[in-house]
Amino acid sequence: MSDLLRRLPQVQALLAAPGIESLAATYSRQEVTDALRAKLQALRHDIQSGAASALPDFESAAFRAGLARQIEAQRKPSLTTVINATGILIHTNLGRARLASEALAAIETAGRDHSNLEFNLDTGKRGSRHAHVEGLICELTGAEAALVVNNCAAAVLLSLMATAQGKKVVASRGELIEIGGSFRLPDIIEQSGAVLKEVGATNKTRLADYAGAIDADTAVLLKSHTSNYRIVGFTSAPKREELAGLAHSTGTILMEDLGSGVLLDLSRYGLRDEPVVSDVLKSGVDLVMFSGDKLLGGPQCGILAGRADIIRSLQSHPLARAVRIDKLSLAALEATLRLYRPPHDPLKAVPVLRAIAQTEAELRSRAERLTGALSALGFNDAIAQPSEAYVGGGSLPQQALLSFAISVTAPPLSADALAAALRAASPSVIGRIQNDRFLLDVRTLSDDELPLVEAAFRAVLVR
Ligand SMILES: *Cc1c(COP(=O)(O)O)cnc(C)c1O
Image (spheres, protein in one colour):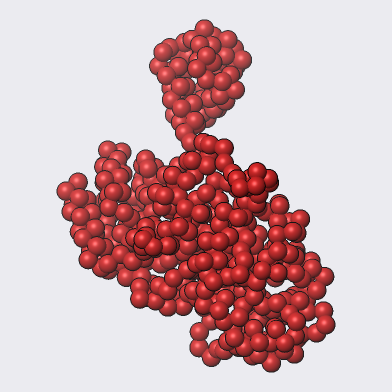
């Protein structure tokens, strides 16, 4: 063993060998060095564990081909397609909303060509990038003015910095949210330079609690959508109209972080508790913020909409420049918002909404197709069963959407091993595990992805 270890060549010596040197013409010297180092490390390990009893021929074509394969594997793009069979429509870990084809086309054009991003074609002078979407947002929400930034977290931070720095922000203890990725409202308030004044209790906050907390230093009353949890039972919170009345009689601003921000009423699809942006503004809230890539179904961005004087003061704040939206997202946002106007039907044209509006018959037939395909491949116990899908992305936490899931096993593989094998497929298929069975929810699948799911299961068979 020590003899084999002694005979292992040095990386530098191998790099100079003629065959291996030729690899550096196809790949970078650094890549070849890294691959060799990994290979020698693995060999050393195998010799020590007794798994290797001889050295490979370092000059052989087979050794070179192995190195090339290793480098190619390293070169695979890191960000890649996965098939979302989790049943969670807006899955932050899986890239949230899929964009409409119109939005994708707009991204391509904006990326390929120069544009009037900040150029006014009427006057020939500098223009505003916000002008491209402000009118559309106002039309769709009833707001006086609007502004778009990089994401909703930035929208909240900017609003507080511009209106409440050095002043007090009053918020209910029932709404001091944390959402994934360490976005904690109390921390954001602190970062903005404002001082949080908590009022009420976790389950109950009254108008009088807010009223009692307002003093000469108070700038903002902040409401937030409790996106990923719900307090149920003995609860109460004042109506938006009441809070708006209080804000306006005390010279403070009523703001609401809506999180998901839905533009149309989805209650007929079973989603009853998501406030529609235009209703929130109509009830007297001065400024709302919401995400572009949740229920709106657009690109990552944060939309601010509300009173014109507040929007203008946000626009001229230095932070606005630091968190501004990029041109590709802006192009995708404009194209997505246009799909909310006739003759388009957003429930058909915007993928997230289309997934919510799917009928039971569509879901059932997709489930049956996939069950049949998996059975035909030899996954004999594949069965379709009723399932609960979720909107996710911090929206509508409690409301399940009716769905179907294909439940399957692949003995002798465990459910975990099957999940790992499907993740290793290309593209990966991500589902969930329940009672030692692998579940694929069809609510988050589209019909044209079914052949890819089949291909992933076929790859499991040949492993
Ligand atoms: C999702 C969410 C945010 C953060 O939105 P991003 O666009 O991801 O920054 C903020 N507030 C609420 C209530 C949310 O649900």
